[in-house]
Length: 237
Image (cartoon, rainbow, N blue to C red; front, side, top):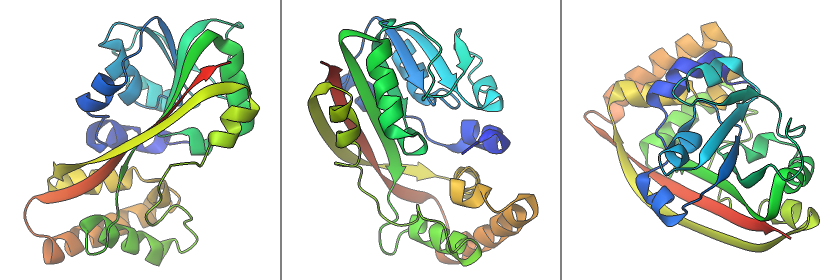
């Protein structure tokens, strides 16, 4: 999935990983961030002190992370660095787009002994009666084959990828937080959703207009959206 066409909306309206995530999972040393996009995870870790290299398949997305000094266009399945180059590898909001088993082997290759892999997600929750459920219903009316709609929990999805690549000490945790959005910000966030991007420019504009009307009708005022913060961590064996 190339999010390049939504790079501006993505950078402006998609919420970054919260400070509590980085407080709970500090990392140091040389860090490679896969699928960096606009730099949400990479930027948060760079503030902690690690020397961060941000990678993504989309040059327009990486252009939105101009504050990060080291950015490389690259695929997670073919990491362009030598064996044992990094103390940590992170992947935020992107592992489901990879060939997971291949990416896991590449992560193990570029990590130093006992190096750490972090797969992280920060997802809105389309709970019954929520604004997120309404927004997804409008997408499904236009893109009924969208497989990522609905409530998906990350726990257990990728353990096998890591175990088969030789990772050990797997650990999973998650917690929920609430975030507030204006109508404009939530519309921008949903325009950067893969289910909307698949529609094409004209259909995206039509969706955005319908979305605006529905928000005004059913959710006037400031929006509160529940999110799940998730992490799967492991060490190279």
